[in-house]
Amino acid sequence: MKVKAKYQGKDIVLSSFNLCHIEGHGDYEIFPEPRLVLDMKEIAKRMEGHGFAVQGMDKRICMLKKDHVELTIFPEGRIIIEQLLPDSDEAAFGLVRQILDLPA
Image (cartoon, rainbow, N blue to C red; front, side, top):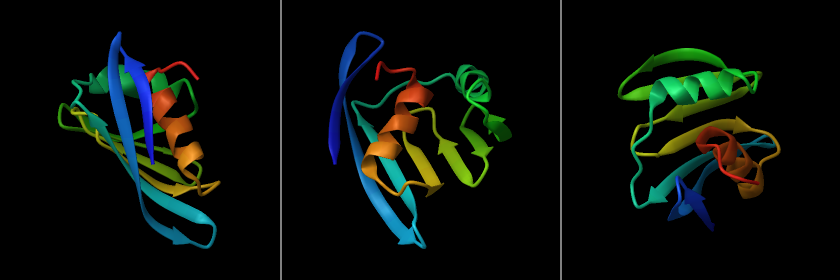
């Protein structure tokens, strides 16, 4: 599935790929086009405000967890979402909107 959005005033396309479905949970990988330049510290702070806990972070990766959902975020905008419930592209894009601070 592809979604058009604006990130920092620029048009982007976000593509989602479902990696698997297991007992109602889904794993997704999201790729932006064009590639982005994300600030891992800023994203960690924003996502802590949404109830996520930082599991690990440096300039190359940010790993977050909330309940059963795990996020792995890369500075170029690639995002892996694991154990997503509900298991849907729409739910995955909802999380991506929070991560990138995109309008709903």
